[in-house]
Image 1: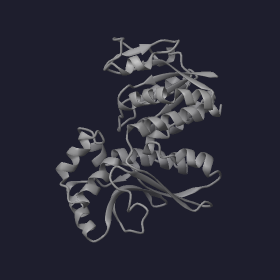
Image 2: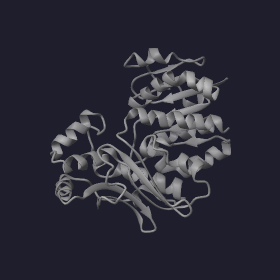
Image 3: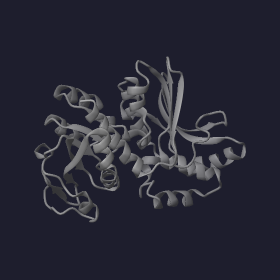
Amino acid sequence: MRDVRIALIGFGHVGRAFARLLLLKQYLLRERHGLNPVVTAVVTAGHGWARNDGGLQLSALLSSNSLPEGGRPPAIGSLAADVLIEVTTLNPRTGQPALDHLRQALQVGMHVVTANKGPIAYGLKGLQQLAAERERQIRFEATVADDLPVFNLLRYGLPTAKVGLVRGILNSTTNYLLSQAARGVSWKEALAEAQRLGIAERDPSNDLEGWDAALKATIVANAVMGLELTVDQVVREPVTEEVASRARATAQRGQRIRPLVAIGPFGTRWAPVEVGPDDPFFAVDGFSMAIELDTDVAGRLAIALHQPHVEQTAFALLADLIDIEMHQ
């Protein structure tokens, strides 16, 4: 049995879901993988922090809306942890301060796992170089499509395969809005419902204007295809109420409009695209997401995640944590 000391940075919906999952799976982690997860620190920007180098009681932290300690939180470099789990709020324009969190953790010898797409979109190459220098690992499966296994599929299921073209529905909010429009639901009603369910933010502009999808496309282009794409190179065509009206008319013709990322020799683009019944994305409805990889030796593969929630994001973090510990 090996203790794995974890510092959790961020304790919102995803951080709390991860803590619940650790409690739920602690027996299997010990029995199947020989791992005993010990959370030694939970740190937030505005809701306090908690630290116990011998291990915190997660059930007690989950029962409260705030953490016991106030004031300035401890520096990441001072935390007693083997792995940093970073799940702070996304900054879609710079990736900060999450990017600095990951750098600081690697510099002091921690492995890092994140669901935060910002630092991976803006700083992946530098983070990978730093991880290699420190002989640490960095994992980010949750950044693209919750627990849809994009990177682990390539790492373990498609060795030596080269990906030449990627398409994907990688933004749940816009896929839901266009799916609802196809059913005749008004734009205002669909958006309000997405916000009520916690899928869409109160300010949905990052989703509707394509920033979320552009970050994910950048990650896939660089991590999967070995490109050096920047976020501002992704062409974005916003999803608007006018596009939703087109989706309604398109559905009457037996087609669908899907918010598709496309990455290939032609560049990288996110746009609402009309697809027919023979397209693998035709049936990817509502909050569901999917990705299609066109490879040189394994053919064209498509995988989908049906109606994901925050628990799937948490599971991707846990899977990455296990992967790191099993391959040290």
